[in-house]
Structures are given as structure tokens and as C-alpha cells.
Amino acid sequence: MTKNKSFSFVSGPLVDKCLVAMPGMRDQRFEKAVIYICSDDENEGTMGLVINKAAHHVAFSEILLQLKLPLGEQKNYPPVLMGGPVDGIRGFILHSADYGNEQTVPIARDVSLTATTDILKDIADGKGPKKHLIALGHSSWAAGQLEAEIAGNSWLVMPADDALLFDCPLRDRWKTALLSMGIDPVMLSLEQGSV
Image 1: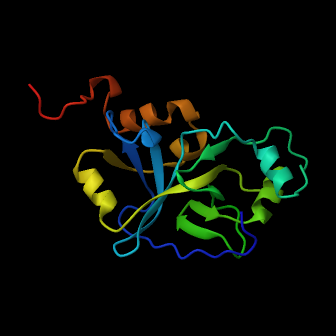
Image 2 (image 1 turned 120 degrees about the vertical axis):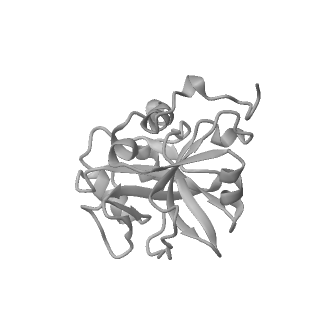
Image 3 (image 1 turned 30 degrees about the horizontal axis):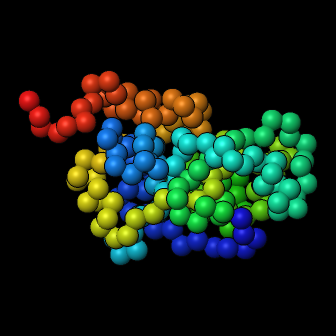
């Protein structure tokens, strides 16, 4: 988390979409991953957050303690997610648009991103956004890299929705994403074009 870090997020064609990993994903870090795309630029590349993998090694209360923040009034702290393999100690909060400060970046009409300690204090006190997820690290691709992976059938692309982002249980998000596209995960083949 940073106190005053601003972000220059770019809204390209993949922003506010979810990537859904295909079976047989070669990179095990992304096996059955669902990734929300926060920024997409044809020159700078793409950045997103994995929204369905818990960071079992760290709890929200531990983050507060490490940052010397008060534990607040909240009794049930939210889970912390592994947002991706890049910059794994940096925190990002993806949240509903009912909350914001000077450092909040609007991603879509109903979704924003904040990466400051202020939002952590507010969440701990029950004054944060109504819906949120907390991720450590992020996923990123160089310009053209993600498009090549999509063309190579590593990812499916779907519109994001609040229910998938904030309400669906973590363990069900991959399957729910596929089912929302009319795809039964059991029917997906690992081999493309085989007879």
C-alpha cells in the first residue's frame, strides 16, 4: 500500500472485462484463474487482478498490523487475494463506486480501484465501500502479449459483472464465469481440434 501513489490507468478494449483461464493453462499460477482487467493500453500493455485465488499466507488483520494501522471496529475481515505474480507486496482494493478519495481511479461505471492506506483504515472501521476485494500483487502483460495469449486459446474474455466480482464465492468464480458464457467446464477439451 502506498500513501500517495497515483495511477495512470488507460481504458482500452479489455478494461472492465474478465479473462477466464482455459483448461490446460500452461502457467500454473493462472490455472483456473479469473482476472479483472483494470488497465489496457496498446503501447503500455495490460494490467489486471486475479479475483478468485486467496492469499492463504496473509490475513487482512496482518496487513493492518504490518502497516501500523488500527484494527478498527470490523469483526469479520475480508479475505486477501493473490492479485497476481507481479509486485506481490503491493496492495490494490477493487471496490464499488460508492467510495473514493483523491487517489481512487474509476475503472467502470460501478467499479473503482484504490491503493492507499486510507481505504484500509475505512474498511477496518466499517466505513469503506459496500463491496470490495483486497489483492496483493497484480497480473500484467507487455503490449500485444495478452492479445497473443487470447488468440492462442489461453484465455476466454467476458464482460465483468458485480455479482462475479464481489458476491460469488471465490471457489466458484471460475466455473460461474464459464457457465455465464454458456460453457460447461466439463465439456471443455484440453486438445483443440482433435477428433
